[in-house]
Image 1 (cartoon, rainbow, N blue to C red):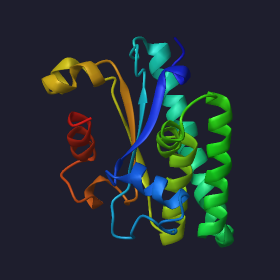
Image 2 (cartoon, helix red, strand yellow):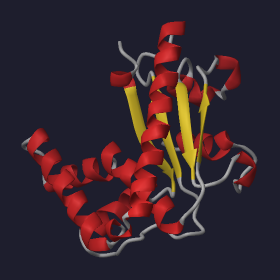
Image 3 (tube, rainbow, N blue to C red):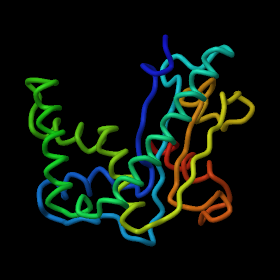
Image 4 (cartoon, one colour):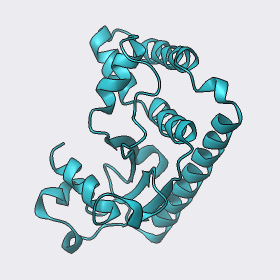
Length: 194
């Protein structure tokens, strides 16, 4: 299976990001809905269901990771150069358009289910990451790991990460700037509980 179609993106920091996005779309909170001092953590799992098995798939995952980082950097530059796109009305309108697209594409889902999909939608999450970094003019970095071998993981993560590759992105200059000991610590903690 191609690595691209066997990939998954999400946020693990802040841990309540889905609820914040849902409340933001509903007009209950405004942009920015992540505070400047909060750590933002995004993840991309390559080989989510089938793993990254051979050298060709490893190279595909690395290429996909490189393109993801490049696109994120372009998005951040775009938001920095067009600060009018960093307000509640513009952002809410874009999220609402995406919500309508998801509702049409999935047809027949209840509003609650659409809201759950929207709050975890990779397009919205990627936009959220870029918007908040641009808004606060923060630094960011990405780091790729894997494919993980069994001996590198605790038993509760075998089924989730063995033979997978992970790209982590943070709103920090580098791993030493994070409020935890290394790039994987907060992700592993979050993953154990999900």
